[in-house]
Each structure stands twice: as structure tokens, then as C-alpha cells.
Length: 256
Image (tube, rainbow, N blue to C red; front, side, top):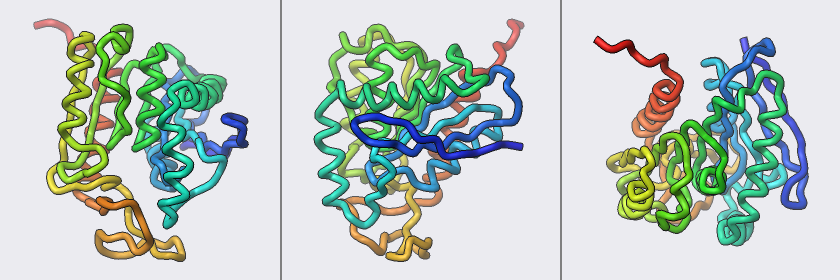
């Protein structure tokens, strides 16, 4: 059984409303920080936190929009997100505020810390890793990418999983591979998954103006170009995230 609650905290001049999910009890458990994409903290990220809590993690889905959701208003979303993505110090400050909240949860093991980010939330967790947060693993899905300078990544710890769709015009596969050259030169452990036929935010199920899910793969409200839902690749990407985390905390096999 898990417990969930909204947790408010201050960051970036706003009152943020994060979502905390955890197993019952206060024993030490691995902790995972989840970053939403540019639209805002949605039920999809809350469900990921629930899923991870059921697997034994203390999970915090951060908020970096002050409780706002920009679904159906891409111009407002970009007006909020683009200045943020241009300011690494600001991203790290937002991420650190959420990380402090996560690690303050009873039982959160700072020595077993992982991160999962989508879109701009992926960029935030990458900035935390670049800034020295000792994540054991970082999984990002169609992330905003920082500059690919090997010197910036020489001190990173843990493993990296970077995912995108083959048809994503915003986080293109070639951009991910260019970025991984910096990870490779820095000696980091990394992997890239490219999902055939998937566009940007391929995990986001379409909803209508009333906020209720709709059938099909095309969004019924305005989005940035190149966004559509791909349910099969959504499942595969989530499975890859779980595989990374399971591998990270697996008991080493004894030698033959």
C-alpha cells in the first residue's frame, strides 16, 4: 500500500505544488525525483510516482510552474519554459528545491537517488546531474538538452538513459547522439533509445477541451508542432526506465 499527498514549497518566486508518493513505513528506501514536461505536472507523472512507490521508491513529482498547467496553450507554455531553459542556474535552483523536499521525506535514502524527467523536466534533472548531484541513474524522455561539452560531465555519477521518438522535431535522435558524445568522452555510462514512428511527448494521451481523454492519437487542443500520442512506444519507454532503475539497484550476481 502507498500513501500520496500534495506538498507545497517555494522556488523561483512561486509556490510550487509537488506530488509525493511513498510506501508505508519509514525504513530507508531509494528516492526518485520526477520532472514533468513543459505543459505542467499532469496525472501521467503522478501515476509514474505511484507506480514507483508501489515498487518501493519514495517518489516526488516536482512542480516548476507554480501549480499551473498550460495544456492547450502552447504560447503561454513557451513564454514560461524558454527563458527557464536559457538559465542553467535557475534550473538548478528549481531542481534543488524539489530535491531538498524529496530528501527531507522520512526514509528517503540520499545514497540511492535516481531521477526521471520529461521534456523541460528532463533538462532540469540533467542540469542537476551536471551540477554534481550524485544520482545513481538518470532517465530522460525527449529532454531539452544542455551543451555537449565533455568537461561539464567528467564528474557525473551513475547511468544515463536518453529516449526520444524517431519523428520528434524538438528532441531529434541526432541531437541525442551528439550529446552522448560528450558523455562518452567524459567516461559516463549511457544508452539511447529511439522509438520508431513516435513524435514529441508521445506518452501524452490526447484530451479534449474539457480535460477528459479522447480516442485516437491526435490532440484535440492546440500543441506545439510535432506532438502526437503513441501508446505502444509509451509502454516501451516506461519499461526501459524501470529496467534502468532495476539494474541500478539489483544485487550483483555472484561470479561463476
